[in-house]
Length: 163
Image 1 (cartoon, rainbow, N blue to C red):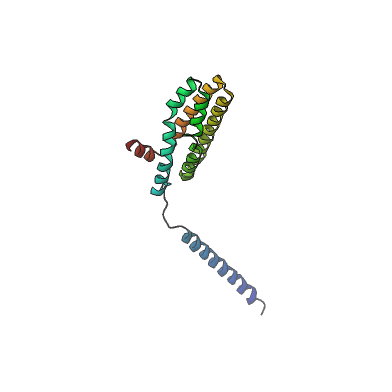
Image 2 (cartoon, rainbow, N blue to C red):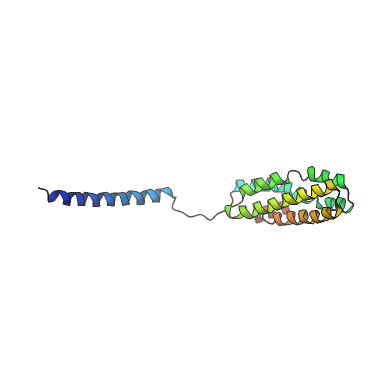
């Protein structure tokens, strides 16, 4: 009487393992939609990036004015431009970075941080009325705007050039 019982247990274990494997296969298949998609920005992402990029690029367009103020060592108006038209640049870059593809976010965040640091250094140089540091900081700000503008998606850059 004891001989058939262990054989029955072995058969039940095998059946349970086969059923478990079947459930796992079907469960994993159900988790995906069966297609693989390339990472792309949605139209909503593009629209949001364009809205923020307009403000960012408007601030960048003020660089010649800022350069004139730096060259004239106009401490007060240099700070006014930084705290006025360029004040929202950090927020705009943050919103842009949130909408970029995950693969592009780390570089964009690094460039945004460098630009914000350069703006803070420029502001500090103007506050201290340090002409040499002001000039060097302006160069960092101008190059920071240029480097960050390159992380904007090509479609956004093309759309904004047409506008």
